[in-house]
Image 1 (cartoon, rainbow, N blue to C red):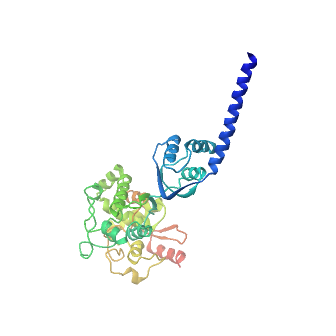
Image 2: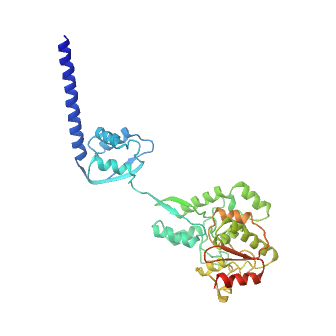
Image 3: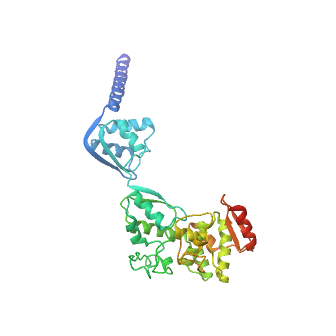
Length: 353
């Protein structure tokens, strides 16, 4: 009886060994075998799908020959939780290994653009960026966002920009005759490749709406200023100096100049008009005929000259008032302040010539 039981056990062990050897042999063969389908085949993985469901769907779609071996290979590689949701294109010959690697590395169809909007970039910069990506033309973008430097009260040849004021209360004090320059918040965005100018602008306005918090809005109202004035000031600060600390000091200088009726004399506005940054602007530059020229015109320009980031917006809201009346940016980017015009001239001779 004992011998019979031993024979049965030995037979079971031999059978298990045989099955294991066959499985390993077949598994290795399956990993080497190629599968081919005619044309392109798109396969989708939804959020939350597990390894077993993915494997079975791949087999049903004819992309792999064995869901079991696909799962075994996934466990072998430690990829059982690595498969990423998305859409994947399969064409030509492939192995189970190829398929597993593709969806583990996320090499799917990219239906989105990752777009970095930098602090201070203006509508022309944005329009060019979207056009180069192939999302839509510059003209289509301007038709929705408005044209840079255009006054729709006088420039009748320009189509009016889209009206988003019913959706966003922060646009209540924005003049209807200017673009959305200043409100398209700088950030890293993901846009679908088939996004419309409307969709892009709304996403950026949503971001602005979130970033301009209740406390900041209350402070703006308490100062007796409009959001539009703050964004316009912030757009100057963004282009003039680098650090938030320096922005706050320059903010104090500019608000003081407005208070006493002194022109802002912001070189950033000349750069916006001319489309060119210079270390120093000529007398001819400072006399250019434009409502954005803050050397000839007192007060803020008619609107923002770019899209400021949060640091510049905070600096416009919370200025630092000092005894300084003048400033310049040295070649290394540092800000050099002066209390008197004579001191400012000496600084220009020292740092800019």
